[in-house]
Length: 344
Image (cartoon, rainbow, N blue to C red; front, side, top):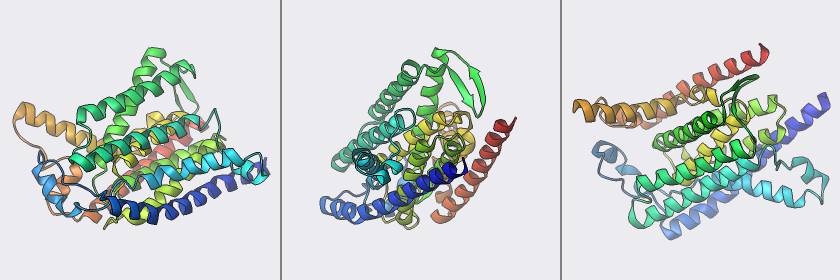
């Protein structure tokens, strides 16, 4: 048992390291293509003038760097699956599993692919998909995964660590769709300050990877580790001042992965603890819209709330660091709750 534990730990850590260096190798290739074809951040819509003003300095920065986040785990999965029968080493590292990683890998690909389409469209008209169309894409993918969970996996319950609540097929379908859309949409609006989205996602995925390892879902933990490795590479270049941005292809793929890992590790109810900044950012937008519509006044100078802090003079790096600290506390609390429930 002890030998098996350490072997799986070696596997999980090795895939994180391999993914990190694979992502680093992609960076110069990505930058060359981005600069050659002019894949840079375009001026934002003028519907939020304060946010537009604070982000002017970012115009022209290479974007769509999310490809260096989601491509390495997919590349490693494909490579190891192809060569697993040719070498025991590849078979040992292979983390492709029908039960554990088929859906997370599919989600990573779908999020990266459709996010990339949106980013490419944005290069031609500065807008990309309309908000309604983007929401319909998110909704469609969410419906597919929700259907898969209730139809193929026969799930009609919500797990929290070792506690199980039977809620019925219809309620679970609605619950999954709500969690999916809430996470993806809040992740999208949070992705607006150098290093913020990447750092928050790294923390949550790290915790979910630990949960998977504790559950002895070692292939899922390996998937999480591979994603952590590529995220770490991205963060190396994305912290202030960012050398490039991930674009929707990064935020969409990572957000979907977080949702699927949370459900596979029986911790979806803990996502508000693992991603408290996502919740705060989303609530700031909702409350701002509500106040403007019904009271004809703004609560914040600009939303999402990180733009408010930019507007009152906070340095971007300070916003990122302080939001990281808040999110870290949430992750620690979520981890404590998860471990407590496992022990009771």
